[in-house]
Length: 40
Image (cartoon, rainbow, N blue to C red; front, side, top):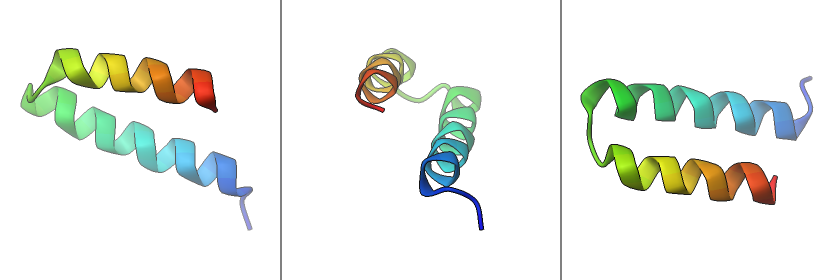
């Protein structure tokens, strides 16, 4: 099994990819992404 952290990052990037493609709240997602990467 994959480490939980890798699974989380994969899921997170997939969700981010979808949201960015839809251009929904892109600015907010950028901030959230930065916060999550810092916290992880």
